[in-house]
Image (cartoon, rainbow, N blue to C red; front, side, top):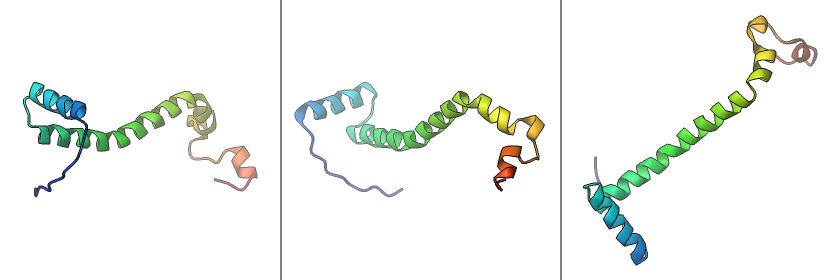
Length: 85
């Protein structure tokens, strides 16, 4: 994979922290920052999935009542009367 060079300016404390963390992990500062960006971009999808799972847990009983096995393959009465499927 081709590499692109980025130049960033950070304060000395941030630069020191990046160097120390990279050294502790046995990698270059470049690799350390690359990994941070990859983690950050991957978290968006992970966060969405977690939020969706929490939502489903929270409203599980409502979904089960509306779309449970006894309603499988049928349109619920409330939705049928409104013309929805």
